[in-house]
Image 1 (spheres, one colour):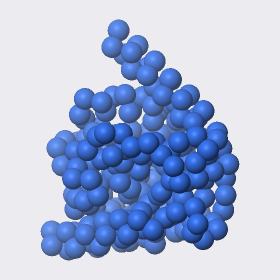
Image 2 (spheres, rainbow, N blue to C red):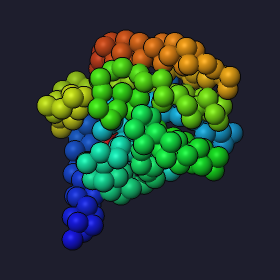
Image 3 (cartoon, rainbow, N blue to C red):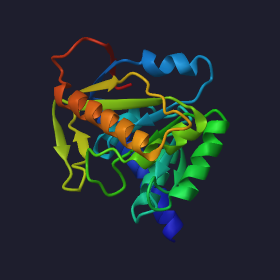
Length: 222
């Protein structure tokens, strides 16, 4: 019965998201930062804040991206929705369950799949980049592509991450930052420095994103 419950939640969740984003306008900039790697079949590691995940799940659906999903209670619901939208999932985290999650991500990267992580998850603090999230990039040499977003109008869920749900008809701005590479011989201090730099860049970009910004490609209901 529980599996049926999760399956139903996945189906309903995917359909609700599809209906919501039919009315939104998405503007993206910096897509060249990851498309140049895709053109050579080189996987990348997308990183974004947990609270900004929803619009990115819609925009990158059915692209074969492998997502790290927490083993905490609501992780199974998230997994079913993501799989309905064409993602593959690995259960674990960059902290608890990290070894299991890391092994799955390494296998996916070796098979040529792009990866997606939320480096402030699964429990926060929100907007703080945990250096453990860089482990897969260090071990594979895959570039890290940070993604920031903002919406002209949105609801905020009362959770630790202030999970953002764009309102119907809102304008969503997404920016892909330049790739960052993590040296294979990076020490713990190096990882902490890189994580702090990426986190700061993500927060600064999130703060300035607005519909009045520059005019990247526009996609309605895409």
